[in-house]
Length: 411
Image (cartoon, rainbow, N blue to C red; front, side, top):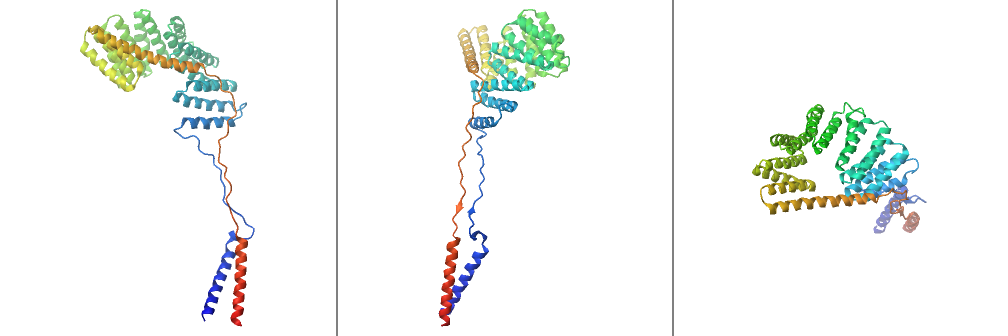
């Protein structure tokens, strides 16, 4: 009885094994089981890793056709320059700009070439490298005039005049301003550009001590144009220039009034730099009229804002304001200390600018060198070993054993 039960159990297990073998397609003879493989390029450009971004862009550049995809490569090199400037790598950044300008020029894309030149000019202007700034703004102006882009040319001529004024090349600056005022560039509707030219010309007349001409240019020309253009920043600049015109003539009440207007508008615009400048200017007027307590209050507020902005140029201006205040109030020691502080800050800014400029001077066009592809770990297909033959053999022997036992039971 026990023997019969065991035999029946064995036969059930045997039949179940056979059924599983036949119903499972993955165990059919000769089949190799392989996992599907998908090779994915890793994301090498982490959003917070400038080196990774640069590497990814260079890999993309290496895939381009350097004879036909000039604009695409130029765009990528502009992107590289932006990353590099943010990291303070001026030499490398400027090399990318030089290369982009060359590529756009070869491709005949004047708009993008102008953008590249403007970036280089603005870099030198920001770092007070005025000779280099003049060179690139002059080139930009020539390109715009050739393309008959007169509105853009007028704006560039305005900036170029400002650069020349800083270089004390008044005659050249006046020439560019007069081309705008006499409408060489046909910009009667660009009121802000025209007003900017009048303000710069007024500044030149002020330096030349031609105060009536300077005053007239602001009051009769620039202010009305800025008002029509709803340009509040331009109006702040007008009030600032007028304040200086009257301060230099010792017309203190008028100077104070215009500096107050500049300060009020700057506060309305939340222009913290403008607020600091107007406060320092107001302190000069108040010191001149011996209103020392109010002058000290203005300088204290200006110092706090400049420190918050961490703007070394503004801090130097505030120090200069304090030097004037202490000198006029008889505190010679404090006056000298403030004066030295102003000079020290100015020198610090100058050294940083010089360092940036020298780095840019060493920049060269980037050669088209092959870039090594991103390394990707090789993935091999996973092959599972096939035990089909072994399982079939085992079932066959179990079947024989079952037949043998069945025969023995019958005997």
